[in-house]
Amino acid sequence: MNAGTSLDYTFYHVVLPATRVGAAIDLLADISVNASLDTALLDAEKRVVLEEMRLSEDSPRRFLGRRLFEALFEGHPYGRPVIGTPELVRGLTRETLLAFYRRLYAPEAFTLVVVGPVVPDEVLERARRTIGRLPRSGTQPLPAPVPPPLRPRKIELARPGAQAYLGLGWHAPRIDHADLAAVDLLVTILGEMRTSRLTRTLRDELGLVSSVNSGYSAMEAAGAVTITAQTDPKNLERVEAEILREIGRLRDEGITEAEHRRAVTTAEAQHEFAVETAEGRARTLGRAETVWRLSDELAYLDRLRTVTRAQIQAVANKYLDPARYVRIAFVPAR
Image (tube, rainbow, N blue to C red; front, side):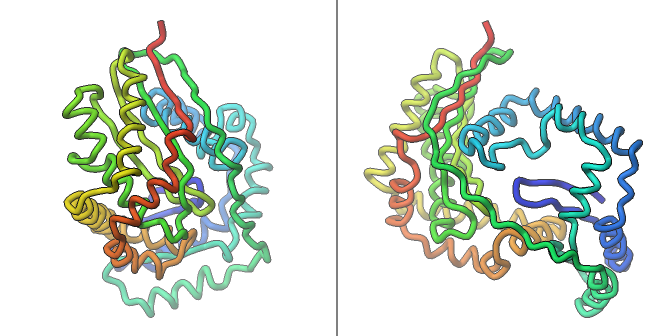
């Protein structure tokens, strides 16, 4: 059993024999509304969280991703670290935590997902007898706030080490937007495959980076496209210029049919890998039902296959403005 938190939702999951699914539902229902939040346990967990924060900052790539989101979503909840800050964690009291728990852990907000060799009717009946009987709070979820417009800027920070780390970021469509699939394929073509444009150009042909990757985070209120690279400090400015040049070429010229086919195949494979285990499928379906629509998740691959080359070029022009982005660079401390 474990748990996790994202920018949009929190989840608890249990992996166990199918014959014990009833007991797992009982357990999840119990911890969802009856947790004691003991002070001693809270103090112990604070130490664990503070250590997680330290380890996160020790990883340049993870810390770069966090700083990119801080810059992209300045003044918005997405710009705050999911795990919190050391000051907030140290100052957290049981009373504050309990008030949060009682306000937000309401049956109306739960999504129960069960994946495996189970009998659906039996699972539904067990859920009705447990979660279904929990008293409703009457709390309605607040709509996800719209982020403020992006404020382009360049930030440079000194960090220990011999390599420089570069991150560029743009606002992108949220998870329920019509452009979702096209942006997904665009990012795959840019930097999610071994044959992606940025990998081929910056690493294989020019030898400017040891790694370069692109990513697309589609969330409930907004999305973000990011490009990150690891390079020698002396190449930092040129790497940024080459990334923007490649983006400009894609915006002007579009993509080839071969790139289109490879991107669709790669996206299909990534999706299938994400749901090949019971745990992965449950997480994917739960996320869709919580912050998206389950019907859209089930139809996503078909939607992906209908995206045209012209649509991919169009979203590149719509979202990847080479003059409006945030840039974070970690450079070796002198």
